[in-house]
Structures are given as C-alpha cells and as structure tokens.
Length: 77
Image (cartoon, rainbow, N blue to C red; front, side, top):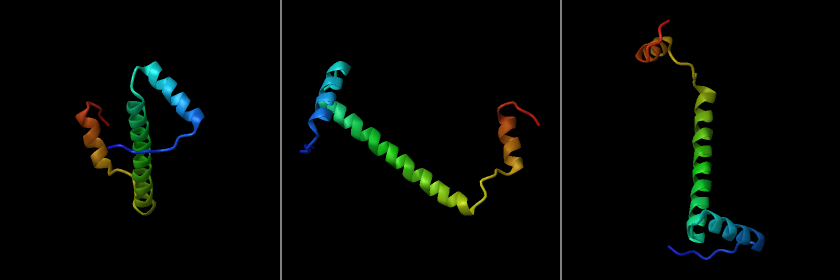
C-alpha cells in the first residue's frame, strides 16, 4: 500500500541518514518505525485493560498453584 504523508524536513533528513547507515530503504525504515509505534501502543492498551481488571480482582496466586509451579522447576517449599 502506498501512503502520502508529510514529514518535517529535519525528521525526514535524519530518517534518510539513518536508513543509509542501516543499509535499508527509507520505506523499510518507516515501516519498522510505525510497526514499533503500533506495538508499543497495543501493549499500553493491554496493560490498561489488565490494570482495570486487577483494580477489582485479586492478583495474588493461590498458594497451591505457586507450589505446583515451583515444584515443576525443581524448587521445593
């Protein structure tokens, strides 16, 4: 997909220089940058959702499950 966007000259020039340094195309650089930005914000949404859940629900593990997990890796209580 092609998209036309406006990027301020200082950022555009820095991006061109970075792409050249990394040996990738400018398109690859912008794609990687947008993908990283989207991933970061998706993680934020997940964290916010979990925070809402744990604001009303206990987050402590049942001691029996803790014991089972520790036993599965060789730890004993």
